[in-house]
Image (cartoon, rainbow, N blue to C red; front, side, top):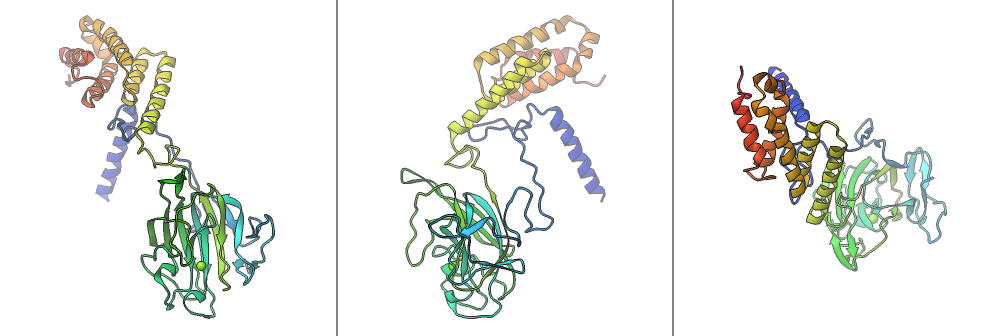
Length: 384
Ligand code: MG
């Protein structure tokens, strides 16, 4: 218990340090990172209230089916808006033989999807004929639903498979009639002018166990044929298959996943130009804050901070001038006057040290020598 307490005390102390040195603290931005380590300027994630239990929908999910109605769904027909013949029985959605696939009215793209399913209690058929259904991301990428409890079939078509492409890592199926869950993380393949610019990925967790680990989609799934990547709309309805077996579903919700933060096609911040653009954007914001600051110390601190995001010789020269103007009269100001400004001086020295140590300004940056001489002259780093 003692060690836990002291750890929390230490981390609280670190927090204080972090917030007081927030501007220039961790390693600076570089070619692949627009942010410092522990950067307080970094965008905060949205606050989302999670579900009560694992598997319950969080506050930002779109509830596709909660047992009450099929208002989010329609028949998978050429015409839009035709009601599906799938049934709700005791709050559970059941596929109806011959009714065809059921699809969402709205389209979805990259997403996190939760769905619970149960194959028939009464075991009928073999292989692909036993409790077959399937969840189709964007209507074309199937994660197979099948009764695979003591039921052999081709591995790339068993429950948890990306149908026709990749078997699940393990068979973690529960018995017929039992409720099972899929938690799916899906990224669609992106093509531009017929060329793949970002692969699509499927991660599937079945009953709490990883069965697909960031599988690179080869294309829309299909029967017998080798998959090929195809361009398609960015959002398409999610579908569930009617394969002739009365498979049941409940608690279906989806969360759309945002684009990677470079807005695009190559993944987050692998594009040096995107990193540079983000750094320049942050630097511009910081310089704007600097221009608005009335306190000259705050102004120069912000200008120094801006250099960590974007080096600019004009800004560096200005900073140098401002620091020299501040330090010059202190040389002969006397111990009491300098002591009164010790907090400011040491804070400026912290930023100057950061900039020189991280090679953002040259090692022989003028104000570095000046502030070090001042600290030495007035013994500011000694206890007196
Ligand atoms: Mg199927």
